[in-house]
Amino acid sequence: MPEYKDVWVYSENPDVRLELLAKAKELSSKINCGTGLVLLGQNLNKETEEFSRYGANKLYVVDNVNLKEFHPSTYAEALAKLIEKYSPQIMLIGATKKGKEMAPQVAVKTGSSCLSDCVSIDVNEDGNLIGERWIYGGSTIAKMVAVKKPQIATVPPKTFEKTSETTEKSEIIREEIEIPEPKTRIVKLEKKKGEKVGLEEAEYVVCVGRGLKQKEDLKMIEELANALGGVWGVTRPLATDLDWGITEWVGLSGHYVNPNLYIGIGLSGYIQHVAGIRGSKIIVAINKDPEAPIFKVADYGIVGDLYKVVPVLIEAVKKAKK
Image 1 (cartoon, rainbow, N blue to C red):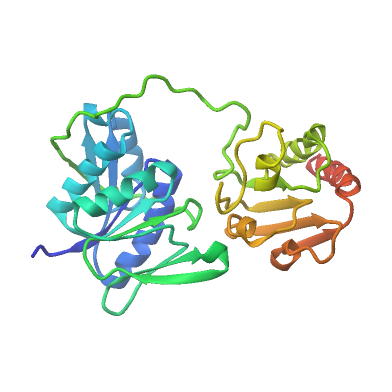
Image 2: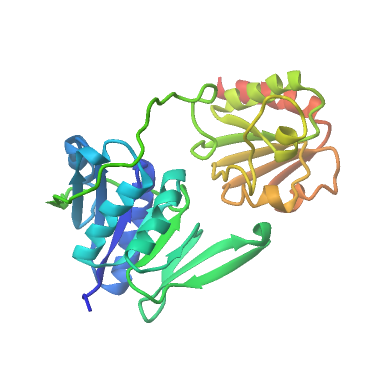
């Protein structure tokens, strides 16, 4: 049996790496071990130099032509082989779209299990990883314990605060791993038109529901989001029930958001939607129905007609920014 040690971190998203690394440092201090940060890809010299300055004890780098493009199978193969060689006790993976595809494959390849979408991570007195996640549409928290090592968990973006740059550099370990050529190839990549920042990465999110009467009024919602320097979204009913050309939404079956400020406008706030916004630091609700469920989770609530409240709010934000 290998001797399992250290807490490792992997994400293709640079910000999520630093968020997970902050948690890895905390966990490693509890179980008296080191931390490791994994970089996978091609031409990683610049990234290696940058991320060697954030306090991981060791930086594991796999620079391979077959990792030029992200494919879940090839990235999972690379990470699994690293894990098998160095035997980390805990492996934290960012629960991004790519991370969610890759993590279960890593768990299968290493003969482990995977705690998914953890909003809280800790270790118990036996050194076993404990994760908490929302279930039943966000109404209940399930506590999970990993008892088989390596202990793998995925964590959504913005669950933890990012770690800061340090004066000490990580020990860099470059690994030559045989990685099979991907079975598929990416023919073309196009940037998504519209939002400058994705809903899941945005610091400020404005979301509107069925209280909006017509498609043209989305301009008002967009104006508020722009004034805040954020992005806007809609609830599932607005996206699926109306032919407005909107294909994505905020909620349990859509995007999870974790902004510093979330403003919900003209939406009821049923449990499926609330499950997708629980990570928001401040929630503001605007609804003309004082009994709307959204007010139960809101930090601040405005009871009123959105067509009267939002224009005033836009002007107030613009004035404050001046």
